[in-house]
Every structure is written in structure tokens, then in C-alpha cells.
Length: 270
Image (spheres, helix red, strand yellow):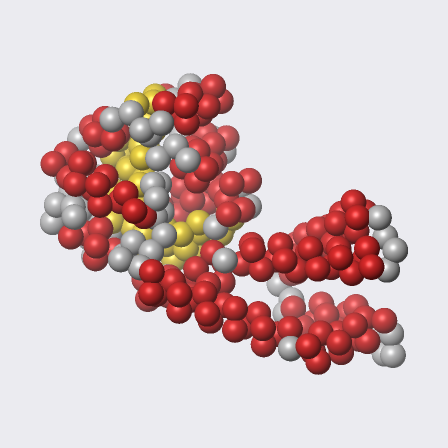
């Protein structure tokens, strides 16, 4: 079995590659201690050009080399991967799955009894190191495994640990959230264009407004409502615009979107 000082990633797609980049760029692990596998040689070639990691097309090599194995493949091929690596996995390994909708019980059933398993759900901004990852621990994952996983995923953003029963809600909020925010940014920019702003400037204004507001909320620790009140002068433009949003039911729409996405996530899980 490989040492837990070595990290293996199965799947060199967008998320697998982002994780490798995060681990190395933050100094969490040296490139020579990383091994990544993928069926597509082209995917591996792209990553190896960026970092001098070991690359292989054989998933079993990952398990032989690394003690921490991150499964970053599409949900449809998780079963195939687990069946392939099962004979080589031991209880000294830590397996972390980032495949959406694949439950801990499913993972544990397809691995040797006693294997520590953690389910991780990073969202899209993890690709630029600004994501948020939710972790859920399996039956055999303890405090040491939790700390390891939190340290790893902190390299691509913030980390929270929750019971697995909350993971569908995480999907509905932070997993789908980037799409909601993108629509809001686009709509704000469209509003600016309608009122005469050039498209590029309108988009820049909308993006920076969302980014700056998020950073204020993150750093200040204030309730979103407090920030809203700071901008809303009596009888002013902001409160007038907010009145339109309230009449249109923006809050309820966003809440319903999170609810619907959460329920859909539950229907899709394995």
C-alpha cells in the first residue's frame, strides 16, 4: 500500500486537475508525491506539462502508489473504477470521492470492509481556488481522516464538514449556486445595457459588485440584511430598486430554486 504522504487522483478532468494544481501550488504536497490516472492520454499530457507529476492510464497504479486516493471521475463510471481498484485497496487507504450523487454506503459496499471513505462535494469555483467543499465522513473515517481531507480541500477554497443527510442541500445551494449567481450577474448587466451602458462595462460593473459584496460579507461577519440597509438611504434609488425585487418575489424564487435542486439531487443519487 502506498504512503498517505502520497496523493493519487483518478480522473484528470477539470476537477481532478484543479485539485492537483491546488495541492501543488499551495505547497501542500510536492509534485513527485502526486500520481494521477486517466484513460485519455491527452488529459494527462496537459497536466504533466504544468506539473512534474507521475501520470498513468492504469487506475491500479494510483492505489499501489498512494495512500490517499481521490476518485474524481463521472458518476456513471464510479462502479467500474471501484471494481477495478477493489483488490488493491486496504484499510490503510483513505478514499475520497468527489463524484456527485454517489453515497457513502454505495462506496463502502464496493470497497473492502473497514476502508475509510469520505464524500466530498467541491463546487465550480474550486477550479480557481475559490470554491467551497462539503465533506461527509463514512463509517470508518475518523478524526485523522477528517483533518487530512479538510487540509487537502482547503487548497481549493473553504471546507465544511456535515452529515451526509445534508449533502443534497449542499448541492442545491453551493453546488448549483454558481449558476444562480451567473444568471443574476447577467441580468444585472442586461439592466445596465438597457439603461445605456456598453455591454463590456455593464458586465464588469456587475461582476465586481457581486465580488466586492461577497468579500465584504465574508470579511465583516455581518448579516446580509445589515449590508443591504447600509446601502439603502430613505427614499433613495436602492430602496426603490429593492421594492421592485420584493414585488417580483426574488427571495422566494431563489429559495424555491435551492429547494427544487435539492430534491432533484436526491432523485439522482446512487
